[in-house]
Length: 462
Image (cartoon, rainbow, N blue to C red; front, top):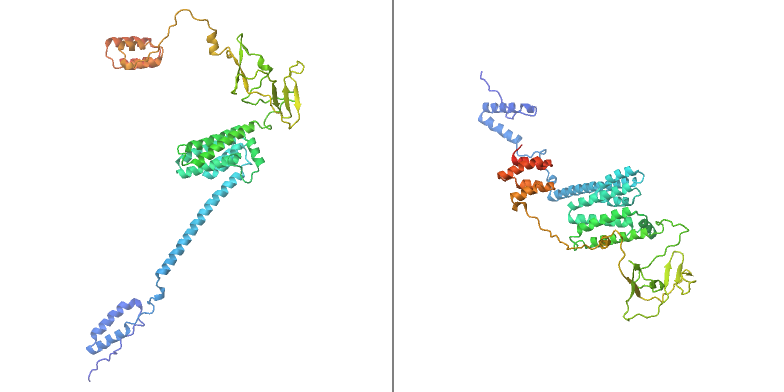
């Protein structure tokens, strides 16, 4: 009975049912099967493998051409990212700026409801906002409380000192803001703001205290001194600051002369006449009485500003014009005793011409009146000294290095302790036995402990 060889299927075994974790074991089994097959069967097995593992592309590993990013898409994506970043940064900076301004406005708005100590603390907080705090601080220079005004002034002056470290352009801008704020607060120089009426500006000028104006002037002077070294580069700032100083001076003078600030005079007191300075002097009977001084009559000398000389011999009747708040009076010095010194009333609004006024002056030639305590009067009252007056000449002091030991020992007895200290220091290097003996004698009699200690140090007595 012949033995048949087992039939072997030429198809490769299916690997669909083989798990992935047994792939390596399956491949080794296939290799063993290939080793047991004949040549014909082995070629069929390899053909089946090529049919199963061909060059057919895997649909799950395919990369679509549309999904590849192009240069245009990459540029658009970068532009969108940049725009979003810039918008976020601008939003953040805007929030910081307006938040700072909002906080500053809240601090300034609630300032009036605080007491004096609270206002001073609040001004210190406001000063931390830098140049934005210039206007609120300048506004407190005219505060009713003196302590609040002084605190605002100190903070502004400290800010001015800190502006030295700023760049030139930033420092000039800060000083410009300070000058503008002072001008708007005091309503001078650069003109009142648009929302300030002229009457209100005048009231603010008159209502400011002299101390407030003095502080404002000192701040403006500091700004002028800061940029006075370069007037060509800061001409506008210097012109505005100098004009502001002048206007503050005028405002202070007008405030002093304001009727509202003047104390009320008693009703019974006579109105005081205002004397107007003029180059012309009135001639009258008052000039006929010379000034007596020192028991010696003085001689009136008449000087004229005109070219014709001598002046006319005819004497004119003197007229004195006195101006008061209610009326204008014309005084006529009449020749008769009854009419002398009487004043004639002139209605309001009537201007009296002074046609009989000459441009002559009467000067009394004589000794100038002096007080009894004046040095010249004391010297003049002394009797002359008999004999020869000796003049003492002052000689320049010599240096201690040029003096000898004897002169230095004499200086040890001087009344000034500083001279004795310098003389002892000059004798520190001496080795003369006589000088050392004199120093030992001097240290016993020396009343000043510092000089005695220095002499002992020279003698090595410590």
